[in-house]
Image (tube, rainbow, N blue to C red; front, side, top):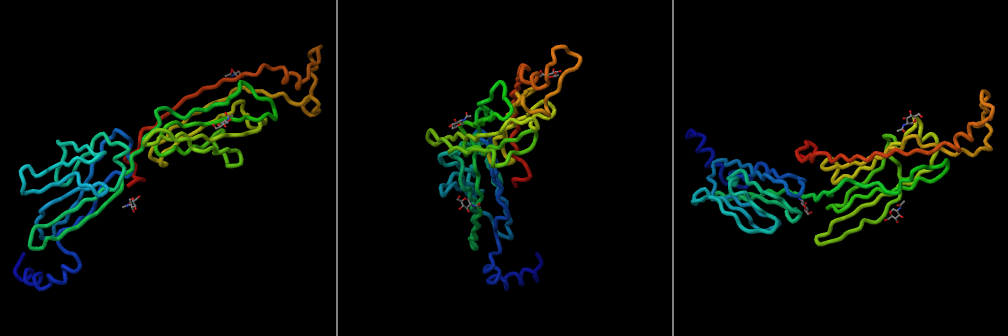
Length: 295
Ligand SMILES: *[C@@H]1O[C@H](CO)[C@@H](O)[C@H](O)[C@H]1NC(C)=O
Ligand SMILES: *[C@@H]1O[C@H](CO)[C@@H](O)[C@H](O)[C@H]1NC(C)=O
Ligand SMILES: *[C@@H]1O[C@H](CO)[C@@H](O)[C@H](O)[C@H]1NC(C)=O
């Protein structure tokens, strides 16, 4: 720094101090959402702006769990705070790693820095982290019957068990999301302490041929915890489901001329053995904790 600049700086010092020049936090990086058991890297980016750092501290919900004082030996100290396990091999000035995060790790994380005298500038910046406890298994579809007749109600439930927060459920038929007119919402059931939540979403449809256009009815239920962060799907495919058409419907009756028995198409439909092929496959997508949508 040349002397002219130094003189200017000194002259301006009172004004600069008023607009908080000196040591400041430029950015705090804390994962917004994480899944239980994962690790979290917390970063506190500083601009010294001529100051000398005295200390950096991390707090969770008002409780200090970490301090870094460059002058001390060792410089880093970890304090016991519920829900916080610091990786001692990865506890630096700018970066602290928490391992095996739990739902109790959910909270507000605050970085606080203090400069040495004479300025003793301080700055704080906070960010929230939410830990998701995902279901142990994919959602379940229940209520499927081996066959449905025309006009019959297809009443199903999709249930996602034991998560925190409760899973949001959606139904899709043949690739298209089902509107609220076909859905039945049930209250979330919570159990345990801290509670885990079970969500159920009902689907109610009338069996009609157009639903089975192409011979199959594809049902998909998706469970999500904070959309884009965690998602799990289950699909059920009803293949070759046939209907008992009301046989008085003349438009659907057609005599089979080549057969002496004159079997009508509607009778054929009526007598056709209903077949159900159901495949249930579950895909738990990898957690997208580094999705740019979240940052
Ligand atoms: C963190 O969460 C608290 C409580 O839920 C809220 O009041 C606060 O505004 C949030 N802070 C940030 C930085 O999102
Ligand atoms: C769906 O679940 C709700 C709530 O548990 C229950 O009352 C209802 O009978 C179930 N319906 C079907 C079709 O299983
Ligand atoms: C569905 O029916 C068609 C024609 O009858 C048959 O070829 C096919 O194998 C059946 N699919 C299943 C899964 O049974």
